[in-house]
Length: 270
Image (cartoon, rainbow, N blue to C red):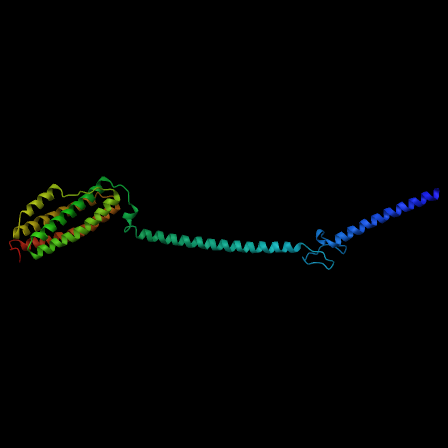
């Protein structure tokens, strides 16, 4: 009986040893067939080079190397892009500065466009209306002279009035429309009276009256108003327009004075 117990104990121990041996073999087989799940083999640890060891162990440091290279590339790309962006911004700033510089140099020429819609002060509005009335009067009396005079010099002068003051009136109208100024649509009482008087005249009498009134007197009055208004004008656009009128009116006045003196006492048609 005692021998049987010993035999059974030995068999139990052998069975347990065999079972643990089988488990150990299975575990070793599993590790050998899937080395990626462990960083080492029985031969040793992962190497630092990122290469596969001869025992079949795969070192994950390859991915670390790729990450490092990616970071370097990303850093270089970011620096490059930053440089390009800075260069682009610099170029834009340079263009902007150039545009501002050019805008400043051409501010006088484009002032009307920049100030469109800005309401004029009373003095500026008066100056615009005075210029409009002067231009309208010279155009109307000029057309009257073209239809009634037989004198070539008078007709030439009248044509110049129609052309020059017609162009000036167009500029005044454009400025008035942009700045909300309502211009007169007909001649004032003084100019209506002068036109009515000239309408009744003909021949040499008409030529003398036209050159004396529309030529000399009217241009003297206009020139005096322009200079008077100029001292009160504050708006740059209105000032520029008045400055354009002055030399034209001065030239007209000089021509009218010369013609009036030369034609005084002459017969129309010469």
